[in-house]
Image (cartoon, rainbow, N blue to C red; front, side):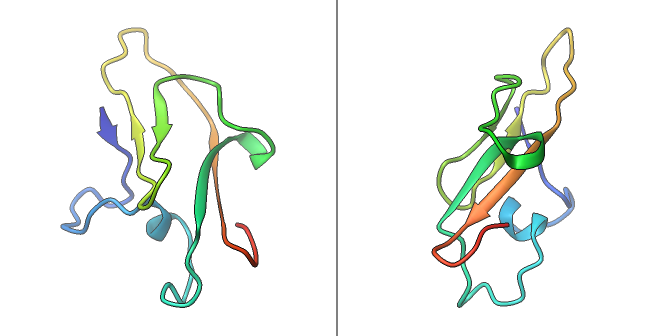
Length: 86
């Protein structure tokens, strides 16, 4: 398994939500929930069991890298709080 990061050379923990979204004020505008969704973010992601996301912060996305037949997938990450979602 490999944590899907956006900067593999970084010494910062893989905080997928911080790297994926541009939010200028993490202190006052944090997400309560992030979900792995199907393409277009309309339904929960069920395309393959090889891609998962932690259900709690930092919502790290993990992809299997030892699948002999390989796989190709498209997904969406939806994060929200009591005010908005992105």
